Length: 149
Image 1: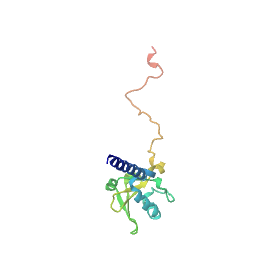
Image 2: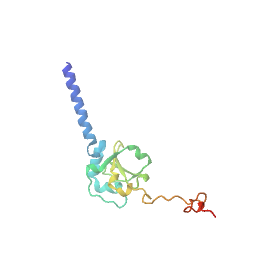
Image 3: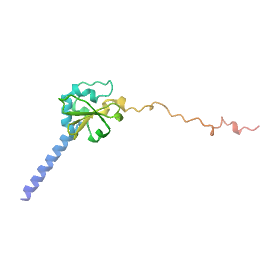
Image 4: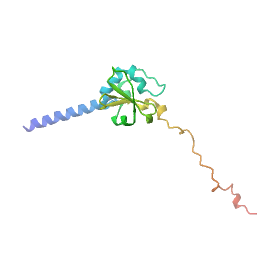
């Protein structure tokens, strides 16, 4: 009887580890159904997902990441065709990068932001810091203050 319990526990542990590998494989996490729908309906949904004038042919599964459905709270829903089972959203804070969810908003996915390095650059990082000019503190001019009259 003990051996039977041990075998059952080992089988359950093996199933859980296999499920964990499937969930995280390809960066798509638990939104693999949404990613499959996005790939299937790419021609229709690409305008909802891509920022600005960016263009990607049909992306691979690894190009998507899961996002929390909590992002829909501050996002504006964009219209998709009636044939699609997806609901797509735009968030003003995401610099034009949209995301789509299933109809029940349980799983959401978007293109990986690292595919668009221009979105990750912060404005002004190429400028060198220059301290402000101050009238209160001025450095001495090459030892002039030490010269005696």
